[in-house]
Length: 540
Image (cartoon, rainbow, N blue to C red; front, side):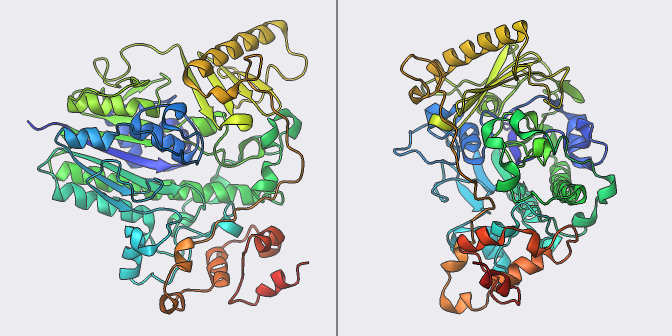
């Protein structure tokens, strides 16, 4: 019998609780629920670092931030030469394929993949991106912002102008199914990676209308007092351009987020069906996970990069018949760092590098799971003055933010929504004692596994100044690949203004004048091609 196939189904910015099998009463995820029934659901899985590039590198090479050099969406120079999953599996006889969003920099660096079929958020050239080339082939080459309008509408509801048939989430599933069909005779490792449900939240119909907003759960504590939050979260409504947002607007955002996940789920169901039809299901390790979560308005903030559960916890499902317990659940704090040891274990390959991998195989015991219980877990983010560290130990979570030396201590069993910071203002003596002890443990961890720049002259974790000034808000990224087209091709594209208006034409919870048009204009934004350009022209 050939070695087990390995199929990693990976999404971007998906909350741990956005699945039916996670107890969500609203969202419809029949395929993910099937994976949970036929495998094990790790209910308390976390990302080692809640941001795209750093999390993906930790998955790819199995190491923490200080080892691979990425602590956010930065690129180290020089880049450390570390073994990767596709490199080791490829050398061990596996056919390796990457499909979808990899977020590598440079984009085409293969890291050991035999072939990559990319669908990136902001590619530099159309020719570098297989999905863009596909859209051109099927008649959608004129669409300027194919994954939704970033810049002005990054955090706003919008509907995809590309139909479900050709949407990026459908394309990833299509390409995965074709790969499985073509390579069913070989042991394979396929990393299939969706951009969604990462914002912009541009679900296509019928998924954009799948969840009526009166049925959608609202964010919790949207109006939480800002002084109770860490400093960098206090301006979150400004930086996401959602100060004006009504409850209806916030629920519409979540409805689109859920719609995107249900479209992904539909593709996952088709992939699982293909494995069944080809007789591969019994000999294929399938893991579904995300690089990090999404606050989705909780605590009055969006996105990732925070040590709150909605940001650091991730969905994590694993199925391998006869080796992984069907219908199992585990509350172990497993991590994306455990994926490389698990894949190497399945393939019968020893890790040849140094330092040793910090993760462990999730097949360490009969039925799946870690061989040894973890007493604690550290999640990290950022570097230098803006770094933070989070220590998870049993029901306790302690967060230390270098910026301002802000501290948080939560008892997650009693305070699931993380609203009662036990170190805020006059803490009880036992809370202060526990906070101090957990901070000492984080200091030890950082000294052993983190960055040397994290300490002051006394060897303590940095307490940096809080920056002053007004945040700018709104995303300033534009479709680079469009600017690199030939003049002839550029003339065939929709105008910048049409791109914006087409994306928001079905929305009713906001209008153009609600948005921060001044910052949009200053960033180089344009509504050219529409009468609304005058709104920008009239701005001082």
